[in-house]
Length: 117
Image (cartoon, helix red, strand yellow):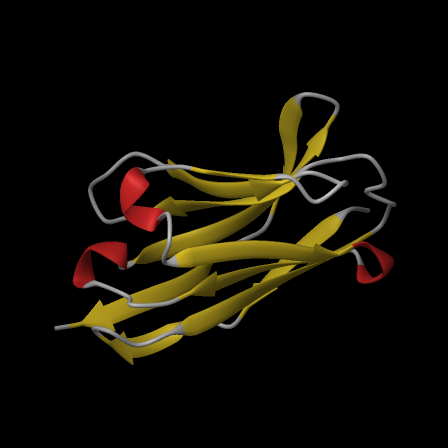
């Protein structure tokens, strides 16, 4: 059974930082892309960032570029999201995901990130 388990969320003041982790188990994700999405209250799910097996990364909104960094440890089947200069608008449930081919097939339960002003 494939599981993605996020950790590292919490409450932080604006301008602070958090590092999210997502540990995947149940299969190897060799060659697959892993990434992060977020869902803010009353909003649609939003793509945050993804990272390919080779390490190439992409980001969602321009507001995340330069503040968020995504990385992965393939040996540990783990992906990370370093978030700096956090803003109240970053408050959301952050979800880890992994592909099977071209589809975002596997999802974690999410971790809450709350940024206070």
